[in-house]
Image (tube, rainbow, N blue to C red; front, side):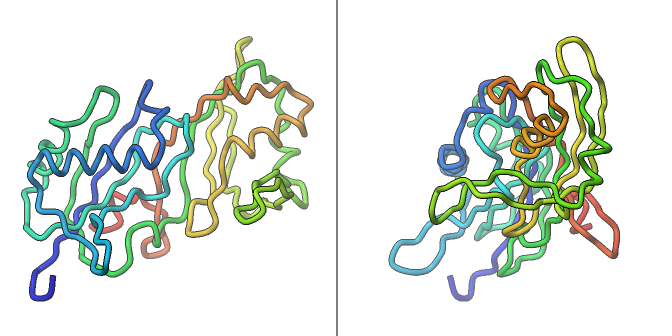
Length: 234
């Protein structure tokens, strides 16, 4: 690749309905197939086993929907931004579409390295009378988190990773909340783990299988202000 001018594009996409059950690896494979079918000159890494230079910014756990997640692709050629998104969309199944594309400065670091927080909306079936104020003013907010090495559940204090929690609506069916949580390199808080801890603290039912979570956007810090990642490179 020496001597070739590289181009990097940041794209946003939504993932709805049954597409929420696609795994991170399968999503990567889907995007790679789209790139191939669209005839995009994607850049490849160097080394013995070159691979496409793509990046899904802070991938979501299985079962989450998203209104706005982000995908980066490095290419050998320059493309009109809308054309790049449209060509990718032609090969995508129902439930997932690219909605935004911007060429951004090429760098050895990807956009995952600049993010700060993610905004989520969650619905908790059968959960009512949540004591959100009491929960967030605790000295420690503890969740159970699986250790990557031992695969065992361990306690983790995530109080500093909670920016805000708001109750949006409470009905007989359950509660709908807005959560702004830490989403940075090696510091990403899974909202389901936090909601389980909130329900336990409140003495409320927690139906893990029935929880529905949608990521609304990912934010980065720019000039001291939190902005959507789509605006970070303006």
